[in-house]
Length: 253
Image (cartoon, rainbow, N blue to C red; front, side, top):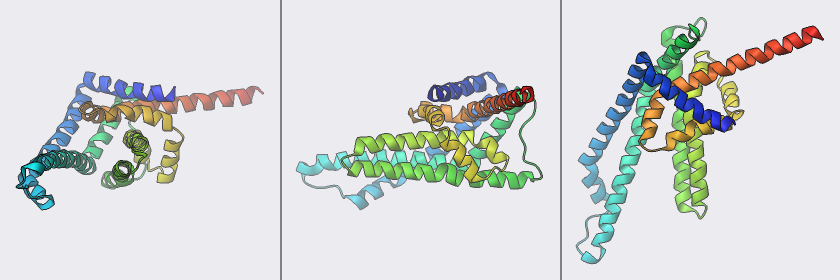
């Protein structure tokens, strides 16, 4: 059920973002930032692609192996484009997107409960600096780990299994990058926030699974903070209801 709830919250956030003008603007802005940086990265690849290919393997004279050279050049090009897309996402995430994500999360809270969660006695500049620094353990390192697992998968007989594991790891941490926005804004210690992730792996796997769909993932990632914030608010409501229920029960007994 938590796995299905994760998928549900992801698309709930997307539909709310499309229906709400402010959220739609910021979601599309984040989408445009990622696409623009990706286009710039791919353009650099086009400029230096031939030099990179010649450095790896100069075009052979023999027609017998020329086909293999063309195959290698296409594989290299696809790998470079994929690497450029990953790097572009990480760069945009650290420099721009985390601020947009936090702002979208605040707007979602204001729409649903009239106020946004704030950290006490912390300046805006320090808070934003803290949020940016959280992207390193929350996004950069997990993505690098997933890439390393994929490379290991290519080199071992357990490739299909490792590929599935690496995809699952990437999905979980991409989801956590969004669900962690409010706890990070409250300056909750990293260990505590990571423990919360470990206690809700099925939900995060479900929330992050749609991010693995090429093309659609850029759109879903752009509006993911909305669904993650809805999840966090509903979770807090459930905890308050449970706490009040326990207090009433203890009072009766």
